[in-house]
Image (cartoon, rainbow, N blue to C red; front, side, top):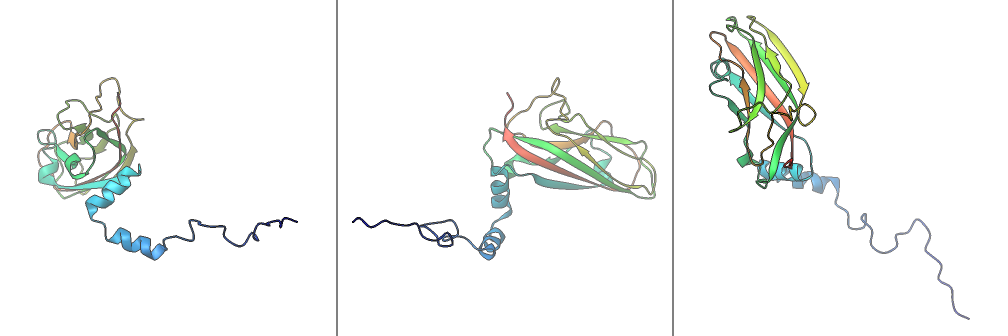
Length: 186
């Protein structure tokens, strides 16, 4: 008579399993803490995760965003292949205007470095009132892009800009952007 092999009870592992060679939560935390900022960015962007960058501008910089746009996401620091495109998903603007008002409201938008059209169809307006504090968040990115005028170009940094320079004004403006790194749109 040939003996019959019965499977082991369901509470016993059969051979290798992910849990038998698993990494503990503590090991994962220690590994993440050991990553440099660039390595963490590379991991998050490689996994298709949303990454966030912020740019704090004093009033002296904010007033001249038309003639001197400011880089908010520098492509060269992302450790990404040159074929990828920075794709904004959302952005937020927080302002705290000082006792001196700007000469007019300021409309902010994004551009890729070297491309003369705004990349994102949505804009955020910063008030010119003295002693104004406000925070606005707006979706952007592929759904908000003006595809008729926009060019998605790989390997370019993203800048925040305004439609006109302003005089006077004090305080600060904080711009924060959440973005993905995607393949170039044909």
